Image (cartoon, rainbow, N blue to C red; front, side, top):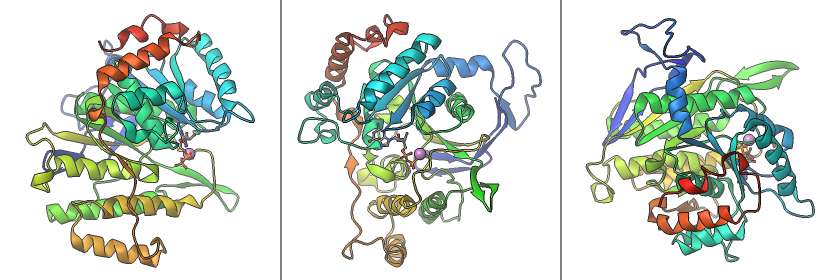
Length: 410
Ligand code: GDP
Ligand code: CO
């Protein structure tokens, strides 16, 4: 892969946000045969081998809820074999057991490709128990099961990635129509870690285009409607601290993102559509040094946020437009309720939310939040997970049965 070195950087305390990086070449060859390479270039070349090394240590979490099998299969097909895939399904079990159907399809896929796939159901009572017993009850409902929601599935996937000893975790939605786009995202995650370092790094993808049908021809929109609104407010927040207007943030609600696991364990999560925006907000809260008494770990090494612009068009299952407003509202609420948001920005946000009809009884509801995962007793959690995996009478893990349960940290 060949991509540009970031041109701009905004620094807030220990947080470094890099400007959007453009990809010049998806494939730029192996190490031993550098086709074209210039030391002084503003474009960096990352070889197959370097991407491969990162991908080997990366888990790709694929959240699934009642998606069409063809789409899920396409997504799996786009994930490089050297990654470990963690499918977190919250699909229905009755009247039709869709999870059962997913199991069969994924088992076959794993058999044919030897891809290392771990498939779990979000409502598996044993997984609920593992969280409850290792001190992370926040994720559990009154029936002892993991709560519904994509963010909740992501939290489960992140901890499983850590439990199987991975260094990086990346997310790819299961409703993506283009396996080639999925493949590109994973390569870009790997490129981001290669360029920014293996710890404290966050890689976020901004798609160059999103195809839409307009007047019966294809139109490639550059920015989604909610992305624009989220980015605008996040950039304003940053400008208020730096004193300079900025447009550095292009990935305010990037669903396609990857983190080094140390960072993933260290940040708080928001539920629902606010999850991605809140990543930025919480990283600034924790490491931005903006509110000294809230600085969780002063003196920590820099947290780097790297934003890469992908080349494939982004096309996912169309589930209706009505949630654009819900997404904007959730993102703004996450920003509104942060202690780092200056009063004047809060007031401006309130006015705009009122105008758009986002207030509920005149109030701006809080977003639900989950505390950082490092509060969990990880030793206990991984023991319980290992027990679950060993008692699975499934050959689903066949391709890597000797690596998976044993690699759990002990
Ligand atoms: P959008 O892309 O933001 O419009 O949201 P989607 O409805 O496409 O959801 C994003 C991804 O999360 C898709 O792959 C869904 O299948 C998945 N998803 C949605 N809800 C849940 C859930 O409760 N649990 C899990 N594990 N995945 C979910
Ligand atoms: Co989608």
